[in-house]
Length: 567
Image (cartoon, rainbow, N blue to C red; front, side):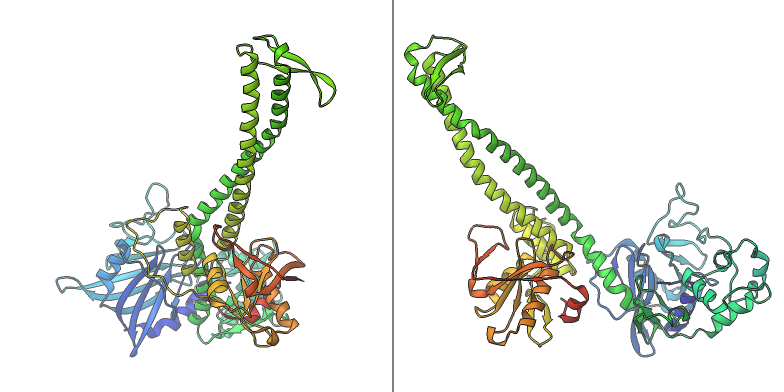
């Protein structure tokens, strides 16, 4: 990808249609992202601005985002100063990834005010800063203190630009100075251009080198200008290993067999490229605390299993304690009181053995002691075997839950996991937290090549709903064999299902399982009527019979082609 200065130049020009528009509403959807609704040319537009360290950008978005109920301070300042005002100007600083949005408004007492919203789209150094007409900072989405930074970004301080190296603006006459900075003897001319010209990215340098073939001192400036002037605004996303995008088609990919997607506008491209990545990252962040809870329970459960295994190993001595008790009973008449040991004939092995005794106990008390140890070890063995079975089920449940959390893609799925953790007593419901009204369970939907509908549950709530409430007895149910995975159902009668449908449904089941990265994954399938819940077990546990098994290799591309709906 390349959201560089050249891309920003074209994007600012594209967004110029917003100039003169009225700001109707401002929202902040997370710690680093705001949206500004602007009414311009009789249409509503939603401008998204993000200072996210990975997904920093600005563009028009058509997506809908949830907004927090309690507005952060930055949002309060924006609402106070720019809501109801007008966007007066959008300007790029040089050819850099810095943009100033100028707003005119009136304050609480009716006096006119000017505000500048400064966008610094610079990866992990990105920021959004609100200043007044005197360049004084009112508030910023990220504060930089004077102690640890080369500049201070705090309310009341004068705004200063980021401390970046001074470079030549390729869109002005300053570019004519470039040959003076190039050392042709040292090579790597593209890298030198990158270091001395503002707003160029490695992707653009690759394009420049591909067009120029080689650089000459007397043509290097004209080559850059000709390349810039010849590039037209036709946004394109190349589906290569890194998924590069640019505001114009690139000749470096013309001779390569690379799929690409073209867009009507730069905003459409950015919206499509970043939205799913952003939502996925946000969902992962929301689920992180719950992920740690489950991971900690896995660690505790494994430690419990180790302790139970040690108890079971120790209980193996119960047979020896029983034999000692029987032998002491048999030879009670010949035992000396208060001895440290007793030598008796073992009629089980026909050998003489020595039995340790407690010196302060009488022979009968030593005999009772060994019988007590025998009963204690017998009970310990019974409890250990019982608890091992329960603990193994708990471990399987937690590992399945952890697998489900790794494939979360929506906030609703995070909420379903949270509800399950509360129900299982793994986390407490916070009194201050508002209870969300439970919505209908949404399942992932696929269609086989023959047009048959397949439904997939991605967590225990969805699996339970799909298998026990939604599916019918004559539907075919799939689950990967002996490992965590999703419930998958072909919602058609057996007489409609072909072998190819079974293979595709099994591949989907394998893809949504812990065996996703494996080959030849075994998948069981049977009719829903043969699938039963196990009473008294954790959510998601079922038993089934009359199953058949098919071996498949998960193929992500093939699964994506079959997908028809993502919740």
